Length: 49
Ligand SMILES: [Zn+2]
Ligand SMILES: [Zn+2]
Image 1 (cartoon, helix red, strand yellow):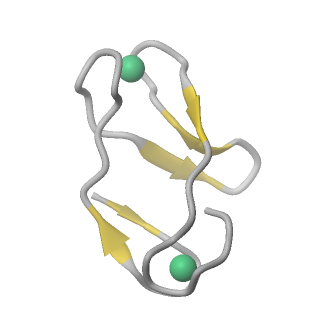
Image 2: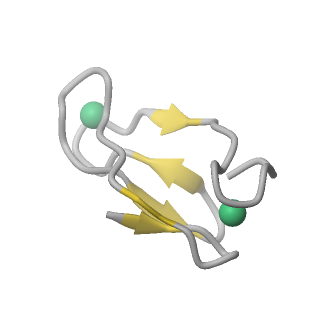
């Protein structure tokens, strides 16, 4: 489960390896397992995650 800065919680998993993604202020959304970075729109506030 990752939390956007607006407070929205989303269970997002890596499309490549299926691990849960983590949210970092510097990196944005990424997978700590394979290093894949993910760009998506937050369903809670409509801004880029
Ligand atoms: Zn991954
Ligand atoms: Zn948001």
